[in-house]
Amino acid sequence: MDDAAFQTESVAGDQLKAFIERLERLEEEKAGIAGDIKDVYAEAKGNGFDTKVIRKIISIRKRDYAERQEEEAILELYMQALGMAG
Image (tube, rainbow, N blue to C red; front, side, top):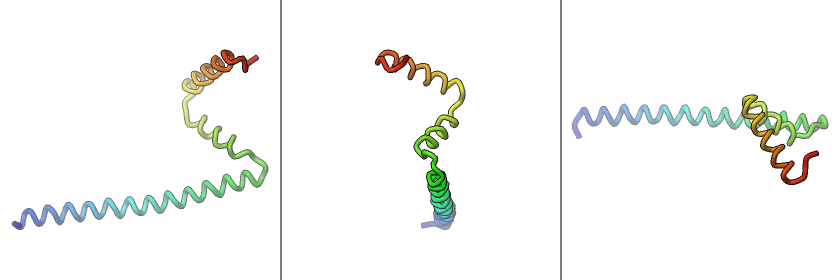
């Protein structure tokens, strides 16, 4: 193996190692944040809140207004077709 090829492999290996180490740190942070989120849900539940509904509200708030309106209109249409809406 010539010197240029060795340097290329060394640089690529160093770069790969740096990516892997960064990703490992981020995965650790993500696990910590997931634990924090779990704790907040447990606290909310302990205070009498329905965490299933809280999760649904968070999901709804992530979407834009027009998207929510469209989904609600389709839901209403389907419920009417099934005789579930008044």
